[in-house]
Amino acid sequence: MNWSGGKDSALALYHALRDPTLHITDLLTSVNAHHGRVSMHGVRTALLEAQARRIGLPLTQLLLPETPDMAAYEQLMRATLAPLLARGVARSVFGDIHLEDLRRYREQQLAALGLEAVFPLWQRPNAEVLAEYLALGFRAVVVCINERHLDRSFCGRELNQEFLRDLPPGVDSCGENGEYHSFVYDAPYFSSPLAVQRGEQVRRTYPAPAGSGAPEAAFWFQDLLLTENT
Image (cartoon, rainbow, N blue to C red; front, side):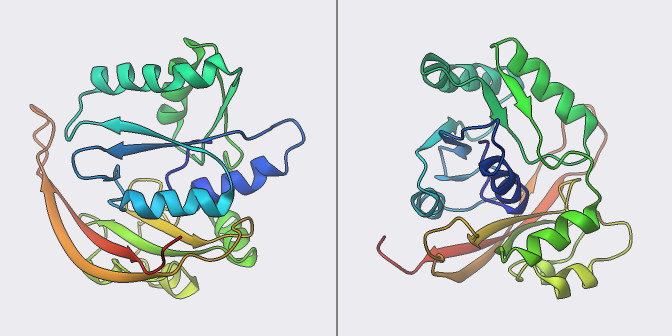
């Protein structure tokens, strides 16, 4: 299970665990090794590890340098997947919903290793995905927002009906275009909820790809702190 710790991977895992054709053996998460945080989400690895304990599955961290290029990312991914392949893992589950180019990329990369990509949420309407997420009792905090789409006030909020109601027009309600990322602190398959508190908020900027002509990207991150010892 490709586990980001956010709502989409959490809901995809819910369906994967109930799929009789699948047997989920491991969680795999991309981590910025320099900062010790989940890539893109900015969540501390201590919280990621606490999620894995609540789920009861072993966690493999794909340790990435601070600013990896695609070649480095793909090389590190192959090296990280090698032990799983050696154990007989044959499928890789993702929480993607709509992005065709991302799905094609994942399928092509995995096919070269003999792995099949599985997408339990693929092409489901946003409203259906979010209604199910809320009805099942998932609970999450929005830990990252893209300033191009949302202002700082959305960062650190609970991912609930009020948050979704307040999203501006044109923002994908599931955040499929990277508008926001979340951290799930309670799920139907957690042994118990995670106790977390909000820390500081930090704004970070990132340069656009060379030659793209695009402006730099700016994100707000909500730091979360684990308030328990297990």
